[in-house]
Image (cartoon, rainbow, N blue to C red; front, side):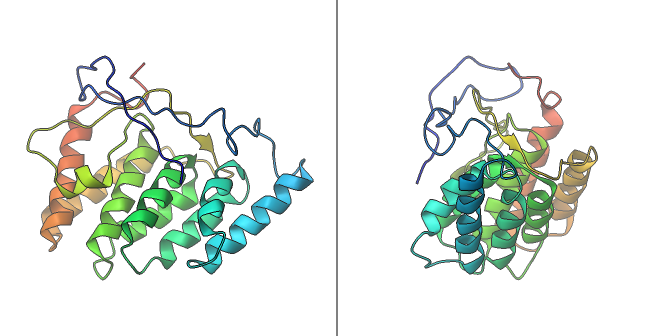
Length: 220
């Protein structure tokens, strides 16, 4: 599973001094030079297989490969990842980390909508809901990277970590301009009404961080 490596970088006054994601931009499959499914028959077939594995779900033998491959699928990534989020029933930490990273790498409205539904589903395992909150945070501001561990144990008055050198690709369905406002309203609702204390605490941490931070994309 391909995951970001973290290193200290210069401090932004609105967030913690953290992280540069050394993301795989030059390694397979991200090195696919932005080929598209419409023009590349090989990519189209690989994306079809990845979608099949993700929608079939674990323990499909190529599931981990599919989570890596789907990041370069401009047409298939949105619906495949949205489907996987909606199908999650077990809180498998390893899968959640891989799925969250891949979902942060593709900014697509369908992923946002699915993660929002999962984060708000009270019958869903809290760990899955926390992972969905992290994906939502990165969708509305790609400079934000909040790990699952940090959402499980947020520290009082700790600001959101910022990422550098992270270039998510746009999915086939662009994010709506209203998504950030929708997310902040959603967080306020969780803070006020969520019965699960862990989810409510994570929502409070994210809301405080976004309200204290600069507008999206202001970090360099």
